Length: 371
Image (cartoon, rainbow, N blue to C red; front, side, top):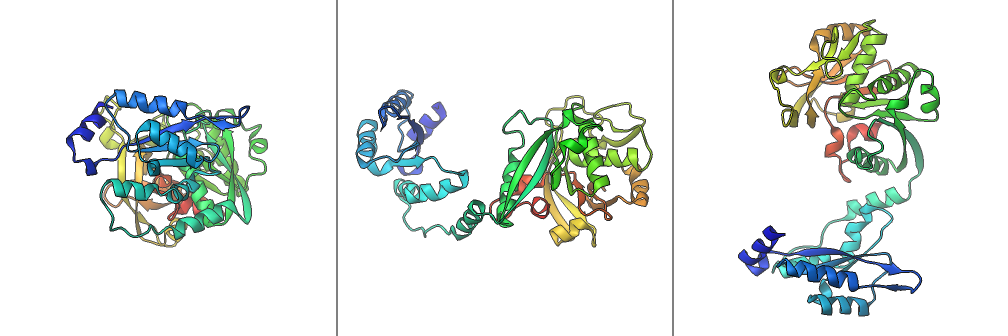
């Protein structure tokens, strides 16, 4: 708050815009919206030395001109700077709602910026139309161990929204907690699913359930996509049940694993403190022509974002490929395996990186789009 106050004081008036988001509660019994909480909120903000230029009002019901005038008068802003933000059926409707309220023009006017064309939102409107009126429905199982945390897989869930809308398909996500998947109940847990995504994560908890889910998908032709840890679990499952390496594991789960199919990256072995030592950011990947990954990307070289510390152990790569699981994507500099897949399966692919992090409304994640 103090930093904002200093910026507002130091910079020219036209160089800052302070937008204050408030809530306008609706009292159902009285059938009226109450502005008093907003007035108190702005007063408290002013006591910190920050004066809002625009007030955006979250509300269940539309604001009348009289209410807007009242908020403007008692909060010391122009009436045009009181922006109505009614609840929307999806967050993707919010930009269009703000456009209708002329929030963009109000900001530009405050900053003396007038020579700008109307925003081009035709693709956004097309996306929203497809999102609201899908032609088909698909059920995808999300196998994870942080399902109790609402935002743990937020990027994946939104990427599915993007991919589903482009395909004019409603993606129904079925959460399946990996900690409770066993050999005895896996068929029941995954019944009725048309695809499976094994999510990223860290640590030992729930990994055996993920491996069991991967095995079911591989053996039953269920479309499978693994991200980061999900890809690593696919490698371990294949090593155990196809290569016969019953002790195959990751050194993340067992640092003394006798068959370390997944191992700590070489440059991390001397690191004693884990904070900030992961392989982060965008890296190049060479994609094998003729592979599923190449068909998805349509390119020999791609770049994707990473967030991991362990990797596929290339000592096992020859055995994997002889048994039918190929490395269809590698880092051209380090030789790190980025993508593994089963060509004999309808759709079985895992990636070391996080394609969901680059997914947008106009450019959805290609893997989720294809899945």
